[in-house]
Length: 111
Image (cartoon, rainbow, N blue to C red; front, side, top):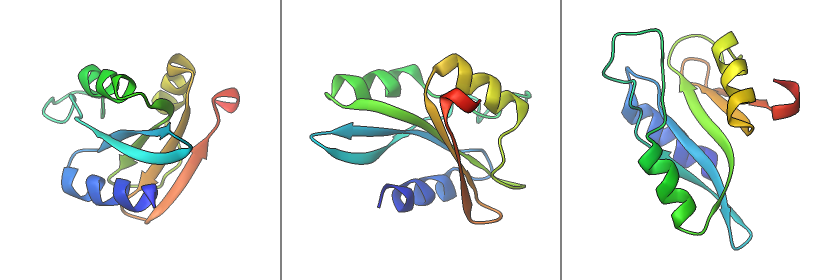
């Protein structure tokens, strides 16, 4: 269910990458959409989760389980930047390829 919500959010973010969080509250996992602060910049950074959105998710009483973002072009395989940031965030990552309509899951321990 949360993957469908994330995919819909990511479609609305094109041509930029979309981002959000996988969170859990009261035993239920859900997608928390976040603003991509890098979407308007012409830099190599393709996404940056708005810290206010991250804080709002935590303030809601939810536990953040994973970072989720989209790749607009190409596959869902993680880039070197994705792997590096996965280690920095210390959270699992899900990457959705809009082009290929598939998902990649990356555990923190394997980043």
